[in-house]
Length: 162
Image (cartoon, rainbow, N blue to C red):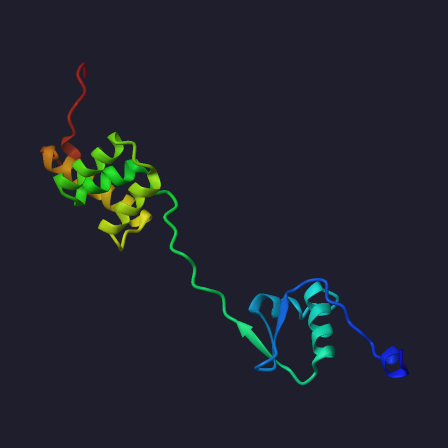
């Protein structure tokens, strides 16, 4: 071994919070890891300092997080039935019922349902179903209005036995 190799300080990186882009001469990492590297002594700080020491002329490249996947948490068969009952057609309901009878799995039913209603939102759907049902109940049972006899304070009805 020559003296130059012995004097050269090698840094070892055990984690991979940051990577290199040698073509663009950049150190690549997520926004969160760059923020965490601002805390002295953190794993991200140690790794970033080691990478900067290895390649001091490299710049930084922050990777933006991907858009969050749309979640359908809370979507169950019952909600599908209720929503189709409110806003779908008789044919849709029959097809959903046939899928259930044939033993079609929930993921396939969910996919079919979301293809029918591409802008479906679980929370909005629950509220819409509730409003729809309340409207049906109100239409069936009209409120009864009580007619009260207008009296003045001096003409209060007397209790029996007085």
